[in-house]
Image 1 (cartoon, rainbow, N blue to C red):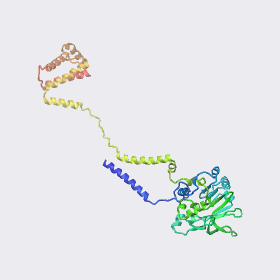
Image 2: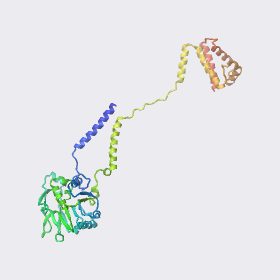
Image 3: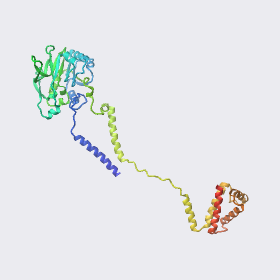
Length: 415
């Protein structure tokens, strides 16, 4: 029990030590953009969606419905689509997007690349400024930040925002000859367009469509957990969201790649389903309980049980030796006589104690054993006199002789 108790203490102490070490170790973040509602990594949207749900007065929700399904709800709303690239939007998606905007909805598309059918319909183009360094490497080197300037409008004054270049390396250029749009945010340090018409590098534009508006933003990483928590970026994000003021905002993940929506854990499917998640938790608890009880209830050594030995002959020899050492030869002869009487009665159905029937008994014994009838009569007569105590003593030689004759008769009868 003492060893088992120390084993349990060791297991518990080891688990506590592992938990403390895991808790104190620096967290490893994944900087892969997923824009997933369940991803709490920097470029996921779990925190982003939580903040917007608590901050937007007109309501905020996340769905996986397509633009076609959202149009079927027949209501004015603000639609938010955030993805690294939106090349997967089809012509049908663009048609429904423009139809909802014409009916009074406002759609905010945040991406670093748009489908060609969308850019052709809204008459815009996109450019990028590629950076070899990742955001983490750029920040560790302490390099300078880029500036995004919010152009003054009827709601907000002009304001500069400082962002890492990796968050604002895409630009949008409107074809002002074909569409009447307005620039919302630009990078004064860069310009786009041909030599005859140079415009600032724009990161957000608004294009009116019917009663509504389509808003394009080229800063998708700002609409993530990192963007909503880092510096003044969240002020820039809320200024863009204010363009849909007065409407309930719905963010759809229908155009986020399926691989990006998957969590990185190998148990992601089990953890995503409540019954399976509880099954995993209970399995780990059962393993822990089994470890504790296994340490407490160990298998005892099973002793080897030997087969009982037949010691009847040893007992008989021991008793005979005692009688022999005592020197009571008559008693030994009487016991052998009783044994003989029982054997004859059992095998030949002859009772030697019935003296009146000797004339029938002796011939039967003689016929069965081959011993002369007269010799049998003489032996039985001698034994009877000892039994009646007519002769009270027997010497050793006579004892051996009588027992030998009785043994011969018994063995012959049994054969």
